[in-house]
Length: 300
Length: 340
Picture (cartoon, each protein chain N blue to C red):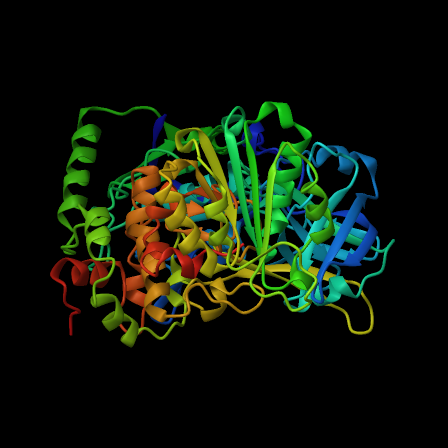
């Protein structure tokens, strides 16, 4: 057969971006009735080294025969060696995932997405506001800031959950209250235990306790259930936090994570490539979201 | 590089080209036309305007296996693609392939697309617009790059554009069939051909200002009226040369955990397209799904790349069973009224 020259070098394929590598479940335990905490380690140490991520990024996780879905990373790159995820059982894939035992493997590829703009946030005051499962991605940012504490200004962590039993990482955050280098405020909608020592009420109630906020010098990261956004954003805008310094994480259906499959498109933006972290200013331009009120379409 | 070729030499040229790979071209199937594998030029219909499905199906098949898996992990499935020469690709479809290239060959290069692109030669051919063609409105009526060779039919002979080094290699297989003797008459001939082609369009569609019109009409009731008619069948996305969306599923062999990870064309017109785990659907309403597609083609893409993601091929016009297409939608948005 006649041979022709190849097209051009840049079409040479070095590696398959869709190929999951195998990771072992090192530790797995329940955080609440339907949310589990997973610690993973790459079977091949090279894959561990390649997984160089930043807070706010996500991975695509595969369970053999069940397909693939995006998951927020809950660990921080400042503590390398293991990756951590906080996963709620919501569908067939997560159901299979919850059926796996420690030492069994799953497929991971990534990290994907923009993550939080850490470089811009350095030197600024940081406010992190988590609701429900929103903590899955915000824990990464919180631990990162704590591990690099001298690079950031004041740190405020606000976390709301429905009940004490549903507060993810409750013990971990209770311990943070002992530290004097951050203001950690925890609240539950309703204390059904009678033993809750922290606040009761919605997360926006916590704003009253904040004291003066240096708005121009503050970056805020928000992630939580839809209903939370509307009220939190109102408060933040009321505090004069610049719209481009309010960071929110969007969730969309994804089949590739690398800008090809189309599912996560919002107008010309791809949640997987241009997000999942968007500023409130970005979101204001997304007619599809604004048309229905910010609250309806923004989920952890 | 532009060369000249006698029309009667095309057949011999393609015969030689077949040494490199399979020859595919537009063939008639009843009143429709489809790209089929052929033995010779005589089996092709070069007068045909548009094939049912654009040539994207060769670079990005409707369904294929990405990985085989077992408990050891995922193994890439590649290397099953034959060399193919696609003859008779029109300028609109070549523009469509360039859009696909942008999507699949830039950041995070898609190895499946890249392999097929590598093994496919694109031999373009000039065409005569019909009443559904609107490439003059999308500025895709002529093409300067993206093909390996492009044949412009000037009645007595072909002008042959050489668009890649592979195209040049192909010419070198039968150099005696090409010449560089382009004279005054040829230039006049070509100039006349261009004006003649441009004068053949009857479509009145005009996409200028569409981004603003989409922005202004975002909440227009026109979308709900269009949604009343839409069947959500997804044919518009299947026939669109710039639609690249896909879905991925794992297929498991009964009683084992061995299986394949398969990828197939998806459509944003389908109800499940934007459903996330837990069941929330970001685009539950048909109007929202229609809006997504048209906003993407005629507004968002222009915002990002300065040109619409419509190449004017007219396939949505020819295919949609209820007359929803780039022409009727842009008209409805401008006039704030759904036709018929």
